[in-house]
Amino acid sequence: MANPTAKAEFHSEAELKRIKAKDIEAMTRLVNTYTHELFNASLGLGFSETDSRDLVQNVWLTIFEKIQNFEGRSHIRSFLFGILYRKAKEHRRENSKASASEQIEQLVDSRFDEKGHWHKPPVNPEEFALGAEKAFVIKHCLEGLNTSQRTAFYLKEVQGEDSHRICEVLEVSISNLGVLLYRARNFLRECIESKLEAKPEQESRK
Amino acid sequence: MISCKDLARVVSSQTKVGFFKQLEIKLHVMMCVHCAKYVDHLKKIGTESRKLFRKDGPENDACVEEIKREVIKKLNEHSE
Image (cartoon, rainbow over all chains, first blue to last red; front, side):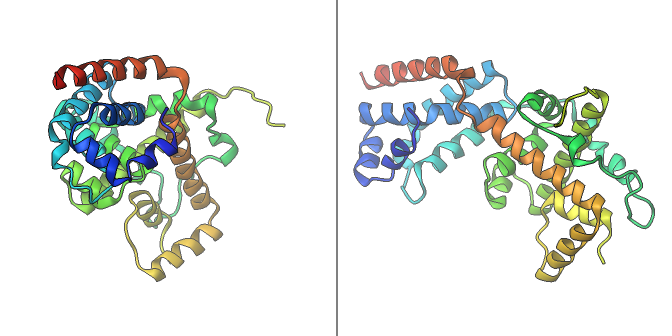
């Protein structure tokens, strides 16, 4: 149902007018088109399936209340996702995994010598093979990030959001966002590398 | 020339750098096998994460359909 043609429809003035007037059919089309994407985004932001279900329902209720405030300057998708990110922030609490992912600075430092050359270099690409069958490794490692790091990583890498927008969502400065991304990516890299090393399954590469 | 350690920080934090710094980074990655591996790892992490959360797979279809039904039900209740 969520096909590109359906999404393109929401560019039309007439459809936006119907949505703002809370026309049931138009709103239903909107719900059918974007629920899947909002749900996947919620999972990506680190919410469980149950929490994502609540969150997405909550997002839609807010949208029904606030839709008349939508000015149509941006695509309606940005409006919907803006509400998702705000609601996500209200829902989440900083988890206690902060310490593990914050020690990443020392771990990364220990990979270099005093001149800044690699002392313990990354493994070879063939040892860092991430395919569909290794998705569980990424999922597992993502759980080690704290919520701010995870949100920063998700919005930048998966949603491809602009840095300024991510700073608004997380209420951080550009340099803080840099620190969050640095820690998130290096934590993931270190975590994945150690997990792949720990499971030296003999897979035929030929 | 930028050190491997500084390169790792700039690349992973996506710090905005000037044209010449960018060029320096590109040249460094071309010449340094370890930094090339590092950059390759980050790219793979990005690509695989996008696949993980962007797929409209059947895995959560039932759940999504249920949310839609609930929301549309509420929407109809609201309008009555």
